[in-house]
Length: 149
Image (cartoon, rainbow, N blue to C red):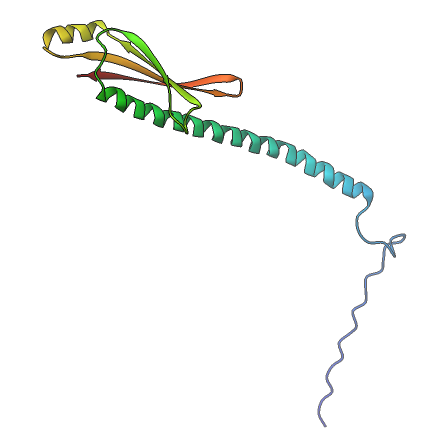
């Protein structure tokens, strides 16, 4: 005779709390509290995301303006420097028509002394600004360099 397998006891559900026998799920109050907590967490998070997006956009514009300024400085360096101090302005070609530039040529006294000592030398300090409009505000980045020819 083979041994009989042992019978497993049947699992009985825990007795229900009085008054909750047939209900399951969340009450309206619990759902409202959960939504209030969620709203308190989401509002600052959405503000942070918006601020990060604005900062990213601004950094992209500054990077683009910096690259345009570097290209313009190379172009200025390849041209003949003016004999006197002055300012030049212009627009960039498409697709950068939203940007403009302003170059200010300044001759400092020590540069004049250097020019007097060395024949055929031209020296100028160049302040190049790239300007664009962001919303209602005009923004700019400015680079300064010393050019000698």
